Length: 150
Image 1: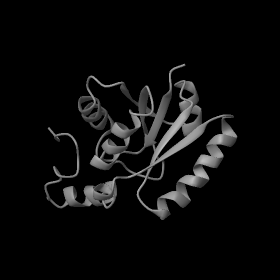
Image 2: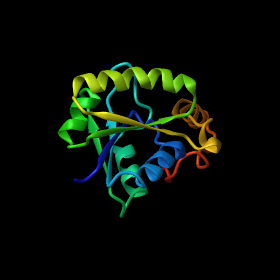
Image 3: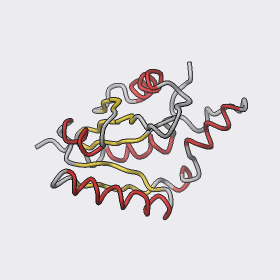
């Protein structure tokens, strides 16, 4: 049976930290589906269509798909035939937040396992929020993202 993981997030933008989690996840899973979620509480900085294209180009030739969704993560993961949700943890604050979500996802979809990978230390300080702010005020963000913003 194929091991499929669903990697959800707003990915606004998709960072080198996210890239690290996907690449390491590919050593565990046969396929990873990156799910760009719609968050009603957030206004996107980078359009989903552009982000989808950039992520697809980044993983060209790899068993990675990119989808956008507007539903509960566990429901979409199940629809995509994923038995696992993949998440990256940068720190203990991430763990506290992600642990609660993992418990709810397992409640919603029986057998849905969340797999946590610890972010590589040199990438742990990178957050999408910081990168958006850098970009918004004219700072080059090429060192923080795995694609070109063209």
